[in-house]
Length: 348
Image (cartoon, rainbow, N blue to C red):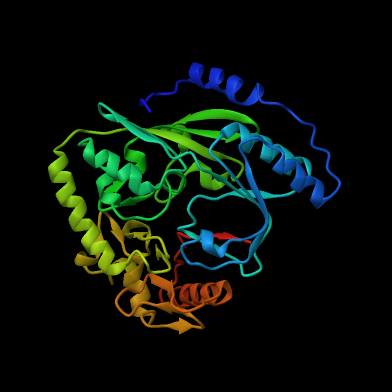
């Protein structure tokens, strides 16, 4: 795939060809079986009923969704969303499930997943479809000698999830590089500039509006030595694999880090200089002080070596996981007088 930049005019033309030329159906559905049949009839769409979500999440936790639809074709997803809306069925977009907690009872609605996974670099730009693994984007930028994404080495998830949550690590965030993001909303393909994405620390406009399905993004980056980037990425991989082994059923850090300047002055005075990086204090600093390390409930455990790492050690449940999260929030609030906020998202 050649890397391209989709401008406003290009987007309008693509919208008309990809969506409005697609066969339209009036979705007036009276039963679950009719909806299932309607979804099954959409070309290029895979649809399942009562799909267990645990295998689709990093935590390996969660009950079934009423419907699970996926496609690499935006027009198929547009038709599926139209059918779901017509039947009054709520839906949510999901990437690789690396940063979500699904309720034990599952989700009474539909999970929608985009599967487009092409990534290509040209000169100092990269275009990536949002269904691609984030590591695929990281690898492509490293081999192209483009700086910035290499610090996200070994972070699980999809490109779409990285845009959604403005992923970052070791001094870099996605918003530093993103030129534009393309998404599906209400049957139309639209494009947002970086400013329109309204990025913040682990935040974007896509987190605040759940009716958008991310399709692709274009990044622009500075050039550097591919060999040097490989060396840096290898060291990051080594460190990350020690803390978060790829087979560990966890979401990485559960809580967001905190901006030192936003904390009460009396709390700032408690934080040693070594605990501050880029103006932020790791939540683990405060979690450790409230006794987080080694806590467990059911099959869910907090690491002995990292207070912000919770994993599913043995057949844990969402109920046990959320209990631990709420308990940690309570302890920090009572001891320090402020709230820690989750990075993970909840489904169901």
